[in-house]
Image (cartoon, rainbow over all chains, first blue to last red; front, side):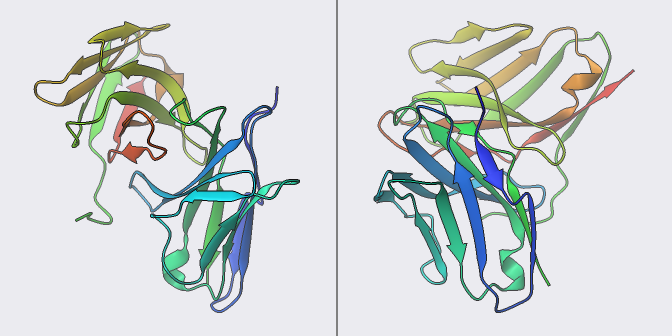
Length: 113
Length: 112
């Protein structure tokens, strides 16, 4: 049973470009969460989605960041016009139900030059 | 607010000894707690969880203790092995909430 899958594992972008991060939840999980981790810090919640719905985006920056979880396909975290401060590890987690244990993917490490 | 670039607290432990990692959580309303292990370059890996109606829970080689009075959580690892070397995070949340709040993490280094 495959775990949470994320791709790409590493992504390099120049300032002003767009970054697209993908997450496929564990089989049978319909709840997806995105977190960001800066070096030597814990993970910070960004957004919580169910299929075709954004449930809680209170941790998302107001501009340039968006997320979706379409009916078919992976969840996408999109960062437009990236800046150096966006460099971080972005982790996706999934759970079968809300308030259940969240299982994390391997992360995407974004480097903005 | 958060500080960036702080070195993580580090626990050095001899292989075979027991390890204890501590965590002070912030929200007295939190009722679900999880310990995660994160190895370098990888995502957080679930270790063990505990709900607020319990004060102790045991897994394989790991025990989590919860003291709600002082908002303290600990993870005990028995007979620490080299593969236990990692950063350990505690996370808290409340039932019905979707977000986990993570602590800063503790680095465990196992000395062979």
